[in-house]
Image (cartoon, rainbow, N blue to C red):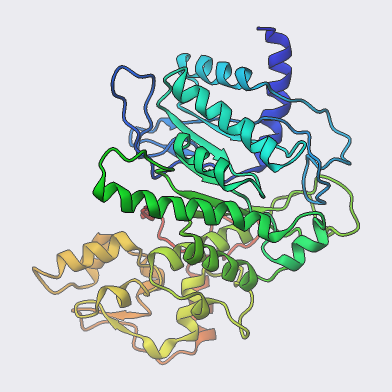
Length: 428
């Protein structure tokens, strides 16, 4: 192997892959057996930390950054004057095994620019995974990017070797895609998603009858949207996400703030910083939809097309629906408890467990770990003291902001987080 040449390719193609954030691996558990090489743990690999603080990672590269398309927002667009490179299939296989043996990685995230056509590109990606599984006996985590427009046959084969598949929808709306990538067709993105969903459903059905049914994409599929390259509202973005979760049973939708990488009159004139605050708000809304029982229409609608920057979406909803508060912490059902600002799902479970044995007061709730600076205005408990003053939404917002701090303090000194500082949400 020509190590200098491989190293140069790796520098180019690993750097080009950094713009893809949809490479989390939660959901797969492919355990080692029959003296095979490696294993994929259910806790995840890329951008994930184990309980003892270890960061577990993937080899994250493009097969090639050559591309036949000229999408305005993409660093690999054919008109960009950048250094191009391409791996051979065996080179990716050898790199993955070599890095794994050195304990650098526990799996592979492989994407690619589209060369020649969709099927030719997807065929190469599948060949890498197939060689790893069948020739190298690699049993670690593999995430393959589905190429828009790839045939059903290739998508079927891809799921037999990969733990997760993902096709990036790229731009949230069809009008945005037509503006920035007129050569691409929205249906080409949906086709592989539809095939993967149907294959997963079929696998689960057949598995009940035939235990030896070959496993198919055990970690499901995900997608990613570029945020800020086109002028969609937060409502348009999140309604698209809700559609994909429902229609294609997505495990995750990722939101990637647009980074200016080329000059194009169709692109917005923005700074070089990634819009982290907006990303954060979209992810918080995503959590509310998936784990807190909210309907997207409750959070974003015609009257409220965009998320507020200074407060989290759950608090914003609560301030618009004060008639549903205060909630009695000792009587309310799980759904209502989860809607109290500052109360996360871990705290909801703790409250339900604790109130079986006694009525909860403020001290009990503080011990549970809820964010009292917000929650106290929206609930009552087993105490004579509670926030009973008749305040307007504007007064409440001002009061809460005055008592709060934020990790985004440089940009928004009073911006609030969805979860309390001592509680993190549980991903499933």
